[in-house]
Length: 325
Image (cartoon, rainbow, N blue to C red; front, side, top):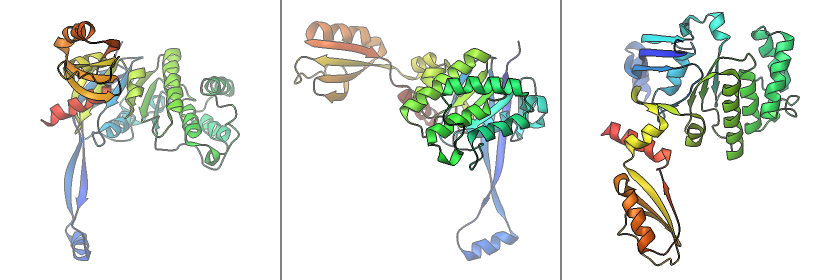
């Protein structure tokens, strides 16, 4: 089976107007307009297999949203090749559009002044869905996302979390095979983030949908994605399993020790990165983890001890710092 998403040497540039401040510079720009070229995406290549959930990561301005817009057909690439479900996205063929969806956490597709159910009905007409199929899908989404009491409310009366649940449901009424999710949990509280993540995982399981997910919440990535693609300045930095990312870019382990006596100094066992009462957090080289753990257990009155991998946020920061170096 061919890849669900295939990107080869993708490139996107923009021309951005440039001028100094002031009236004189504004008048001069009317006659002689100056621009600079911005490379949003540079020679980017990767592929996503059917049914995969892949984290698409990078700092603000890395080119993530630009790439998703090219994959969904909203933007034409400057150069390179893109195929999604064997379609060329920017051709905007009807059969292609019926099989994808793009959810952006900071964009609305629901109509502000009408009930949610009416926005759903509008989408049914747009995608020309049969009423029986539409009703079955709505019932499933209402059950999965707990939307029952929200359908009759105008969108303007919904909280952010309620609106985001309805936005996700509206985007999936046509049961797309490809989900492009751009910060779907942005601004939501922890409980709502967890519910959206669980829903995405369940939708992927039920329909074997392919998901490309961007998020600045690493909990989203850890909960959903075995594989991550990381870009910076529009270029690929890493493509592989999340566990491999940790092994490759973090040479340390974290040891958390609960002590019987708070006054004990553990500086000789590793780098002390945090201390709260009798709880001490040490950072030690991976190769020394077993030896340091054995020493702590034999030499120090320990109440409890755990060995952890570093936080994903720390690993991502390490990736970007190495790229800058």
